Image (tube, rainbow, N blue to C red; front, side, top):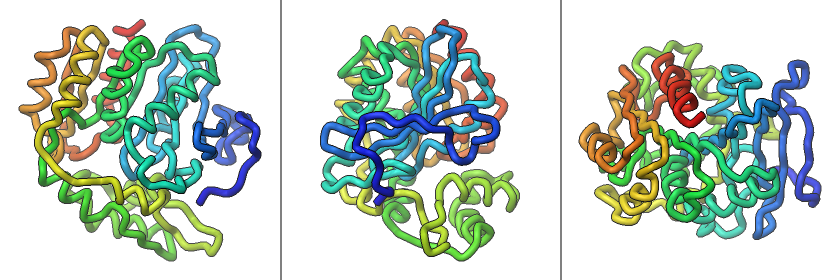
Length: 304
């Protein structure tokens, strides 16, 4: 579980990794069921619509930290650690690891920060949360990035995720962690070097109090994961609520989870949708690829 924190709703402090540059602040808040939840907050006084980034199933806010310097003051950008990930506290009840609860947590965040509307960047699970957000609170969604995710998922990719989620492992060094990920995921990022894999590991793992390098999430997030493929009528219905919302669909060309056919079908339901395929990347694009950054800039321009 994350370290105990103050019970005040909000605490602002410069992130330990960025003290010198002071590009963003750590924000800690309390959920409706008493969990301490964390987010990175890159401020801006531009007045443009803020961005809220939501990571994937086993990922955390560090997946998006490169976007802070990339946008550097152009607009406010908030990167959330979903409950049970990163610096957010682990849930006492694993059934709360579900998209509707994540939506509730994010709405509370927006209300506390007085953000009436945001552009949502959702990777994988984060994209599902974004679609449900649009269904439940369409007035809060100014734009959306759905990163390698849709209302229908391929069973091959779900099986791969099911084989790994909740399987706690630890390592002595970052190099060991990087090599381990490379062995299981080299087909996702075929052009990665060992240096890339070590950098990737530092987003997925953390160092515990004993100096061991372990996965940075609660193993119990696997309990509600059903791993069933096929289409979701509820998510297709949620997508209907995004018809008039500027939406960017990113798809990794090598993705085993999100097919080109589903992506094309999604476009038929989105009056303001665009599809960009990222070459030589599987599930999911890191959003550091030049093509991803170009597409993101175009989405932000369309929303503005």
